[in-house]
Amino acid sequence: MRGLHAYVPGEQPKIKGLIKLNTNENPYPPSPLVLQAVKDAVDGRLRLYPNPTAQALRERLAELHGCGPENVIVGNGSDELLALATRAFAEPIAAVDAERPADAARATIQYFTPSYSLYPVLAEIHGARKNAVPLRPDFTLPSVAELRRGKLWNFRAALTYVTTPNAPSGRAYASADLSALCAAQRGVVILDEAYVDFAREHALELWRAHPNVLIARTFSKAYSLCFQRVGYFVGHAELIAALDRIRDSYNVNGLGQIAALATLEDLTYYRRNFARLIATRERLTRELTGLGFAVVPSQTNFLLLRPPRFAAEEWLGRLRDRKILVRWFSYPEVSEYLRITIGSDEEADTLLTTVRGILRSGADAA
Ligand SMILES: Cc1ncc(COP(=O)(O)O)c(C=O)c1O
Image 1 (cartoon, rainbow, N blue to C red):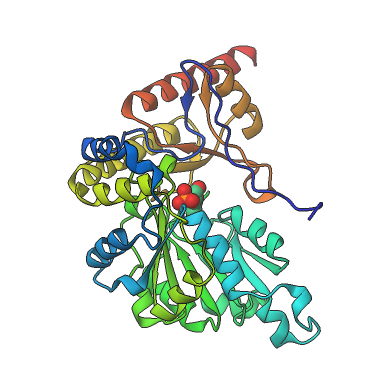
Image 2: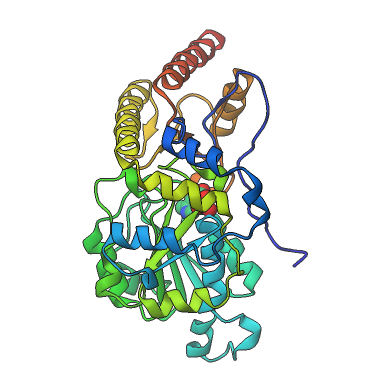
């Protein structure tokens, strides 16, 4: 464990006036109904344990997605469920005869690169074999035929994570392509739809046709609720039960359950926010493209872009000096890029003015 590469969350600095566009948080607050429900619940009842199975929330989610509560599990953020999945569905490499391909597959956790940087960390913690397979150079999804030809992908891997739409690229994948991949895969496939509310298409229904598929969703991004830590999976009852057996008894805190339930009572409010964020995203894409940034088409609440003139890491510093925090990842597939969360319209205006200023100062210095 000493050599473990821990997951590195984006910074949460307390700098006055800072515009925080580094962790894909939603600039809009939770609905007033949610704030009220949480406030109303803060009294002497805090001494009681919450519902251990998040029963009311699971029932409401089941209603929303047209399934039964046995098809839904709620976690302390979707991160908790992603971690449980490694333990439920993959063996540690030390527990199998790694020389035998079928055994090695039972200990293999695979994912595309770049995608959510937590997956390799989870695989390492579990002592499983990691299989990281590159996306196409433009971050689109390789077809099943390409994966077969490339010979890197393991169609028998115990567990496969696919982020869709993807982070940090922002690209969405077509449901038909995901369906073909799920059908070709023997092990469990988790379609991590953390950002799906900002996309044109979702793949939630794929769990019905593919008994090996789990859909991961979260209240953190589109529903402005990172602070409360609530995420969930939808899938076949057997897979859900396998996760349920190994979760902590009270894994989802009471205020989180209350906040998530109230969120589902006010979806109109959130859909308005999705539309606003999508409009801001499209405007930023146009304007930044005009300023010389190579912007990857995004269906999420962030943009991945290759900046002009200076290296991405230098842009990170120059923006930070001007109180705008964005994200830069040092790993090779994206080290030439910045990831910028879509904030409010005012934050977008400030970002654009600041970027123009930086470009001008660079031109003056040249
Ligand atoms: C792709 C992806 N999945 C899951 C998560 C985790 O979300 P949660 O807050 O529900 O743990 C994130 C958060 O950054 C993410 O980017």
